[in-house]
Amino acid sequence: MADLRVSRGRLPMPAPSAAALRLLAAGAALIGLAACTEEAIVAVDPDLPGATIPTVEVSAFASSLEGWRDTTYSGFELPATSGFKILADRADLRSRVLGRFDVPDSVQTTFGFEEIDTFVDAVFRIALDFGVDPDSIVVPDYQLRIFALEESYDSLSATWVDRREGDPWVVPGGTLGPLLAVGEFVTAVDTAVLQFSAPVDSVLAAWQETEGEPGVALVLAGGPPELSLTSFDLATQLTVAARGDTVPATFSSRGPTFIYDPAQPSPGQRLRLAGLPAARLYVEFTLPDSLDGVQLRASTINHAEVRFRPLAPPEAPFTLERAILASVVEVLADAFEVGAKVPVGPPIPDPQTGAAQFIQVSPDDLEEGELLRVNVTQLVEFVAAADTLTRVRFTVRAAPTDGQAFGFWEFGSVESPLVLQPELLMLVTPPIGFPVP
Image (cartoon, rainbow, N blue to C red):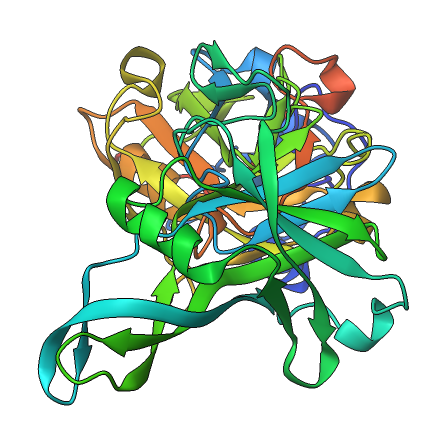
């Protein structure tokens, strides 16, 4: 019996899925026993009218496919735009949250907008990431501190070293001024309440004049080595000028971000997914007319996937610590000319259901060598059926948003040794041939 597998430069692979086995079995049933040569897989006996060609598996590594290019672009989510902020005081990671409070001159009450007269009291409220169990992190000496900053910063470009791009802090990590508030977590509500240690009215009145500049820094001063936060607010009690009544008002931090040390390393020639700044991996290749003697053009592409091979886990603190989701998106132009701002289409749907396709990326599985398998059937099928199209282009990104995790994972690229390169695998049914009388 002939082996219905045609491959080139192929490593030992996991057993085919149940669906793949059913396809192979159906092809074998149609042709009966085949000769023991690879050519017989796609050969048609001219004496058998209506004979069909079986579905076969073909595969190739990136370096053997014409025009294969891959790369990593990052910056799709930044610490300033992510839904979480990290505080850390570890041997391998230091991180602080920065924010500003643009305190207005008036507030809206039941009587409309009224001018603020005096700030009677205020506290900072810090909400803990819901993904963390507060009972597991609270210890007796646990404390947060908020300092005034001596220098302003740009939310999108600030780092541990620079307060804005190309402009360093006087003191790395943010040049800290006077202590403004201290506090601990209230475990029952997953919230830290930090009481002012500085005169409330004078601090907030100054922020009214400067639109909150230069800002504040939230610093972890004891307890757990790392916290993840979702919000950073200022809750006040103030009097209004017209009536003298005391009313509550809450102001959200403007332009919050977090800065950390060490900086995220460059991916080099590796393909990276997730992290902050968030990274996406990009791939394009030319679909050949045939592969290993199997015709691809005008063939039925039953299944096509690209398999990415995970590399060793990144060193702490950048190890991906929990499972995330990823999606595959068609790229609509040449990403290697346009760069990270290349236009993209919607996520590629699941070929079976038509629904959005999400891939679970589990660090435990990747560490054990599990492949990242990206279904590109729809893209390859479309190109194979069109005479004028040759390029398959896509990107893999974290989903539903890029900023899902501080950590990332990396995969082999076309520049890697063959055993670590991405691999294209397809189940193909070439067109049926009939003898001409």
